[in-house]
Amino acid sequence: MKTSEPPKHSRILILDFGSQYTQVIARRIRECQVYSEIVRFDTSAAEIAAMQPNGLILSGGPASVYDKGAPQVDPEIFSVGIPVLGICYGLMLMAHHLGGGVVFTGRREYGAGVLHIANQSDLFDGLGDQLDVWNSHGDEVTALPKGFRVAGTTEGCDFAAVEDAKRKLYGLQFHPEVVHTPRGKEILQNFVYHICRCAMDWTMGSFIEEACARVRKQVGDQKVVLGLSGGVDSSVTAALLHKAIGDQLTCIFVNNGLLRAREEEVVQRVFGENFHIKLKYVDASERFLSKLRGVTDPEEKRKIIGNEFIRVFEDAIVDLAKTDDGSPVADHKFRFLAQGTLYPDVIESVSIEGNPAQVIKTHHNVGGLPEKMHFELVEPVRQLFKDEVRQAGLQLGLPKEIVYRQPFPGPGLAVRILGEVTPERLSILREADTIVQSEMEAADWYYKVWQSFAVLLPVQSVGVMGDQRTYENTIALRIVESRDGMTADWVRIPYELLARISNRISNEVKGVNRVVFDISSKPPSTIEWE
Image (cartoon, rainbow, N blue to C red; front, side, top):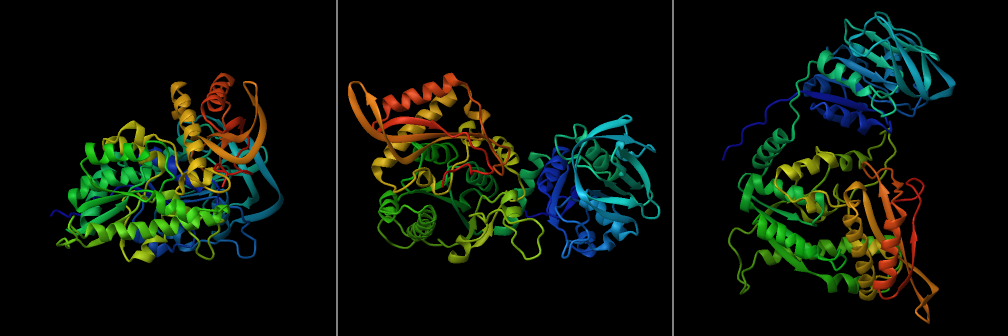
């Protein structure tokens, strides 16, 4: 079997000092069709040199360079011989370690500003004499290191952009990666293309071919098992692995009884009939619902569902090793477990002591299952952001209904039912949720939003239906827009659409007499209610 090494591509490394915009920097670089990778702030100069990047970006961060325990950089990185761009805190570190002056002003310059460009820097080539920029910083450079010169000023800062063109060291006091710096992407393009000499060789076609080569090299002729949920991440992972290793892949689809309407039908049709992927369907609805009986605490629900999934998954693998009459199957051993881990999952799950970014969550794909089940992990899309995963899915031939479907929580409808999960309450929620989806699709809103779904509340209220007094359940509508799920805002959908959804749920779903609309943003709220 051919297992040649993937070709070397242009690469920009981003040292993460805890900025809320670090992932945005990585995305902007990839939008230039150049591969970017986020690494820890304390990665040594030797490690960086060994990775052979074309350039290095030092992210911003919440600290002052003078804070006790503030994240520092290996000063040798400035002598490796590759271009470096420091953004905000990254600029402060550069100035601080190279002999310049940095002071903590005690005030934050936050918001819009105008950059006046000086000295014809390559960083601002073709961008005119002034630019609108976005500031967010507390420290300020007061004296430049030897060899540096001013490349741009703002009203509040004499050193808003600086450079040592000879050593290819550049620093920006503002954030070029955010949308509030309208021509920031062009600044990054100048750095990536003209200064770092990167080629535009990060394409989805090249990624798929390289990912297939990596998978083949990793697994050889061994078998791989994948827990297929029907969500975007696991679906693209399945399609990619099938392209790479064909029948060496077996997918297990577990129906936990907490799925959306017709979910099991769609998954079996797409992957079993269309892609002809080996697919084992396990209906474990009764097992999950019996375990959830009487449970109301959301964390306990999640724990029960997670633990039961592991047991069902283990049982399914044992079953795969048997024929219909119970005799063992030759060469049944699964050595590898595939997961649809994405790049944000990897970044968010970093919980190593000293990481300057606050840990947001531990993602269910990063750890947990493999430790209990003694598999080697295969994670072919762990380099991709969500929008890139969707691009890969389309290129691999997945249908739009899979690729652009909205995110769905691992514990399923259990976390959209506040209180006890019962078959009756699941039926109410499924009916209501189906109406939400069908009306959003009919109005051409489904693919415009991040998520749109119904939540069943443990609240009953008085209503009137016909001439009868009712005392029934409440459904909450949650419709949000987001780029990556980290932050979200409620969507101002047309009143007419809201009215149709509300009327249909009240009239068609038995047991519901009131519909409310959740108009809270994340933060302070979360997208899901539990």
